Figure 1 (cartoon, one colour):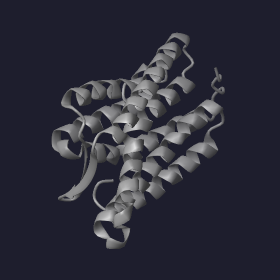
Figure 2: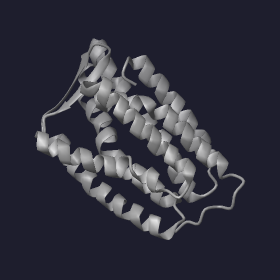
Figure 3: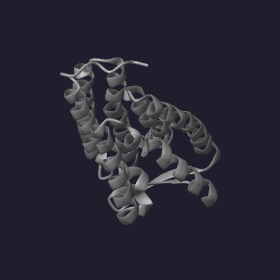
Length: 219
C-alpha cells in the first residue's frame, strides 16, 4: 500500500491469509504455484511497511536501504518470473503452454537485467504527500525498453491462458497499471500494488473453482 506503515502491514496480513487459504485449497502442484502469488504480494507489502517506518520512526531509519531494496526486488525482479511461470504451470493447451514458456524465459532474462540495474544505478525512495516515490536513475531509453518487456512478461501471460478466469488477473493488472500511470505517474511502482488484494482474490477464486474439477495435468 502507499499510504502508511499500518496500511502496508495490514495489507500484508490480509494477503498472507488469502494465500494460506489458496494454498490449502490447491489440489495440484500447478495450482499451488498459482497460490504463491498472494504470498509474494504479502512480502512486498510487508517490506514497504518497513520503508514507511524508516521515514516516520527515527529508530527505524537504518532500515530504509534494505527494506527499499527488498520492496523493489519484488516489484521489479520477481513479477516478470512469477506471473509468467504460474500461468505456464496451470496451462493445459500445448501451444499456449509453449508460448508461455518462451515468455517465462524472456522474464528470467528481464529479471536478471532489472536486478543488475537495481545495484548499478542510484536508487532512492522518499515520501511525497501520502505516497512513497521510488526512483531508479537508469537512462530513459533503458526504462522504455524494460517497461515494454515488463508488460510482456508480467501482464500479458494471463491473457494467453486458455482458462477464462485466469484472464481476469490480466484485466486487473492492465486496469491498475493504466490508472496508476494516469493519476499517480510518479508513484507508479508503489500505487500499482494497491490492487494486490483484488488479484489475490481472483487467484483464490480460480483455485476454488478447480476444486470440483479434474486435476490439471502437471507437464
